[in-house]
Image (tube, rainbow, N blue to C red; front, side, top):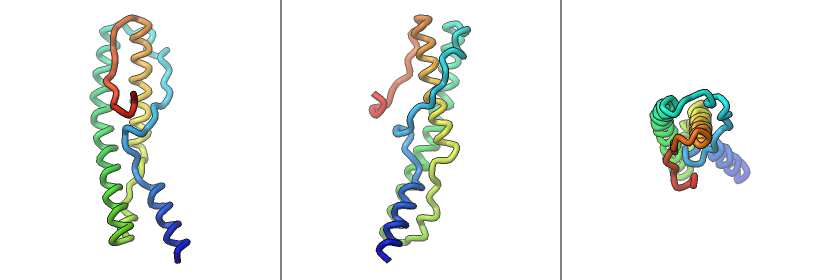
Length: 124
């Protein structure tokens, strides 16, 4: 019984959604932005930033919901563990968008455009 409980706990923890702050950036080549002018880079930075706000909000919500379900499941009612959502495509998109931001910043540095994205405390 104890081994089953430990296995259930491990499965539940591995199924939890990751906080967006803890998702690493996926590599995106800055070469795709080499032909962009500074105004075009700014436009793309604005577009990527707006989408990142939406997606990180969704991922954060998943992480919070999973944390609550995990707590309820572990303490009160174990079937609640079946409601854990995990990361899925949202986490992959967060990683890609972070990579896009890094690539835009690198292209901006090369062209001296001065574009920088605000970093969260865990990314600095």
